[in-house]
View 1: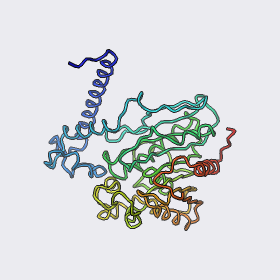
View 2: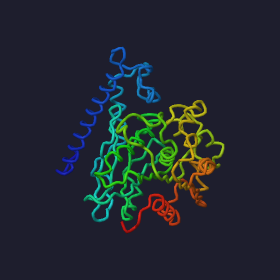
View 3: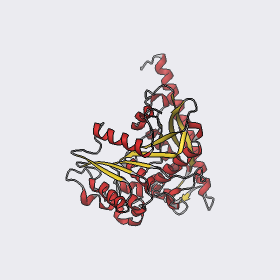
View 4: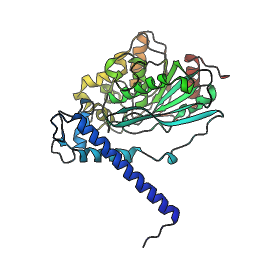
Length: 371
């Protein structure tokens, strides 16, 4: 017989309660979703009834393969997603913050199809003169990752406000959900700028890998109705004033042609991260891929860009950043491409890269270290 100490019993009980609450919430969200889109009122959704933006997930949710999704199947899918993504707040990393700075965590910036979209804001405890904002967008192949790891926090000591954003991953919704969420987050931050001492005219974005792809889109696609989305603060602009893109993909269709011999998978494959976020094999969905390419939207009024990429990246070929760099340079946008010699997919805290990023944001967002 297995014996538990009292603390262990308490933890197990709390965990069980949390799981039950998560399952109940998943069923509530699934029920609302089915009712909202059930055109023929049969209590199930056909593929045609499924919203187009998440239709690529239909086969994953339809576990019994009867070509219909019911509440039980959608609940199971949402519960699996919650197990993979949700961790108790007490288990999340708690960074040391400068004096006078507080963290507002897990703020809901939008609610989409029953999915609560959340962000963290690190800002002065007391109101101060408006400061520039850096927004971190995490990577993870659009299917993993979390706002909890935010390298931009070092800018708090330099007089910036910092935010870190979660967005719908590819097992929840396919493109353009991810960029629509990021744009919604920027609009929310502008709408609430005064509360967090943010200067809404000085917002920079920074992201790596899939996050680099999304910040590049934020920089180039301002005003595009297709990517803007409709959830949250439509009166606000989603434009940004500076973009720092770490090894983000651009043209998915060219990735395999320029991949290194050590590349661990084929981007053209049906199960690649790019295929999962697009909703199908990329070579069979070229129009969708074009709409996900930051180069598609490049114009002369785009904000300054700093692009950083390693020349030994086995996941995202350097060529992807070169494409974006050349497109921006062609229309005379202020852009710098820094190639990290020997750099893989990520290069740690390289001092020369840190210095470049610091100087880039301080220059483009015009902040003094005395703030």
